[in-house]
Length: 143
Image (cartoon, rainbow, N blue to C red; front, side):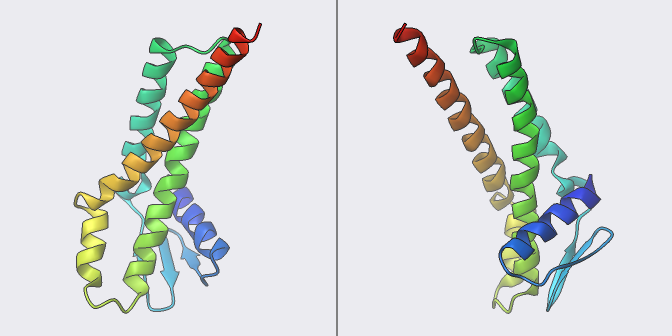
């Protein structure tokens, strides 16, 4: 999972115009880089979103089973994409010339700042789920 996260982070950076290079678990930019290993792969965010998707599917089921299944597939994909953005940002911080880049890196990696990305992923998933559910309710009301 770490190597896939590294690859996806490189894709985000290249999409934004940064000259990124990947060597195994290492993601390099001119000036610095990061190693994606262990918890940095985003398994915790992925599991959190899958659990929330399961809870939503039981508490607020969609009209059809395949729609609940689709939401269960969207949750981990969203978690991996958001975590790859976090890794890309950490690589940019490490490669930058910011005066307090070590503080920013540690904040977004270990501290409360790392939870911001979990919250963003969770909020996006909840918005998507509620939007899709509202459309179904509106369709039932128009019949």
